[in-house]
Image (cartoon, rainbow, N blue to C red; front, side, top):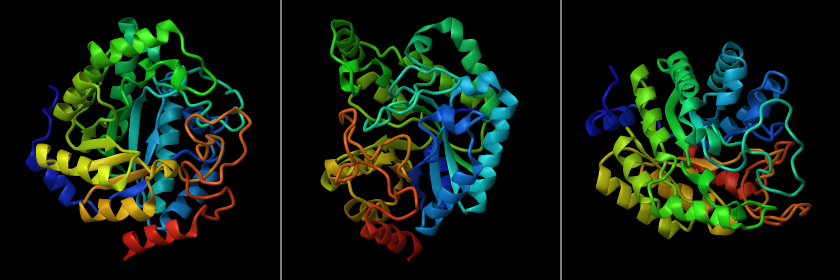
Length: 353
C-alpha cells in the first residue's frame, strides 16, 4: 500500500534534523547531458570527484543530479551501480544528493553516443526524460513505472540521498519550441503552449502517477516537484503532493523574498529553491544567499563548473557566440578558478561561518 503524503509535522521534523542544505545542480564538466554523465562509456568518476571536492571546499554540502529513464532501460544494474559510485564519491566529499527522476526541459532524448554541443548555445544537448511523446503515450508507462520503482527502491533507504525530486519543470516540454535556441515559431508549437497554460496540462497525469509509484516504495526521504511557472493545475497538484515544498526562481532578491514568504506562510512546510542564480536576471550569490540563510531555505544554484553544457551562455544565445563577459550560470572554470572570487568568498562565509 502506498504511503501517504508526509504530514507538515513530519516534514518539519525531518528538516530540523538536516543541516542547511546548500549546493548546486551538478553535471560534470565533461558531460553535455544526462546520457554523457551516466552511460558507461562516458561516466567520469575522476572528474566527478575533483569537481565535487571543489564544491565542498567552498562550503556546499549537497548537489541536485538528473537521472534518465533510457540509461536505466539500457542497463538497469550498471546504471544503479554508477549511481552508487557517484553517491560514494559525493559522500566522501561531505555532500548529500537530491536525485531527479524525470525532466521536461529542452530536447527529445536519444540514447547512445551524443552529438557534440552546438558552440555558444546553452544546454544545446540537454535531454528530456521521458520526452514529450512518451509522456502522452500510456503504453510506455509500465516501463516508466518499473524505472521509478527500481531506482527509488534501490536508494530509498539510503542516507546518502537527501530528497527525491520526481519531475523537473513538468510541462516545459510542451512550451513552444520558439523558446529554444535555433528554432522558429510554428502554429503547432503555439497551439501546444496555449493548451498547456489554459487547459489541463498533458504532463499532469504522468506527474500524478510518478508520485504514486514513488510512494509505493516508501522511501525514507521526502518527495517533491518544484513549482516553476504559472500553470494553475500543475502548480496546485505539486504543492498538494510534495512532502517538502520546492520552487525555481531566477529573479531579483525582492521577488525571491516575496516567493519564500508566500510558500512558507501558505503551506507550513520546509521550502527549498532547487534552481536559482542567473546573473543577467539579477540573481546573485551576494544578494540571494543571505536571504536563503536568514529564511532557512535550502538552495541549489544552477551549475558548478563550466563545460559541455555551456550554461555560462544565456538561455537564448546565438550559435558560435563567444564567452559572455557576465556568465549566466556556473561557478568555476575547468581549471578550478572561480568566475568571481567574491562569489566564492560569500558562499564560504555563509556556509562555513
